[in-house]
Image (tube, rainbow, N blue to C red):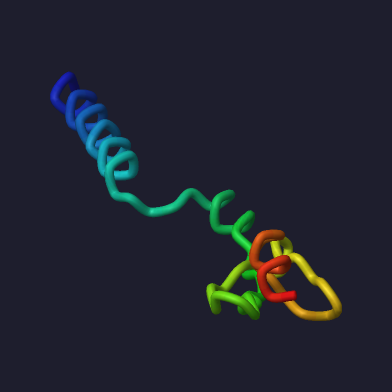
Length: 71
């Protein structure tokens, strides 16, 4: 009986260690990751997420400096 309990404990510990070090994302991390459209800066060409883009005269820029330099 003791051997059976010991084997169950070892199996649970191995499962927990494998899950901890497997590198697989947690289910909540998978659900929270969302794809976002990218836009290209008119000045330098770098691609920036739409949420971070600066629009000036309907032209996309990655930062205010590039918008100023392009004008």
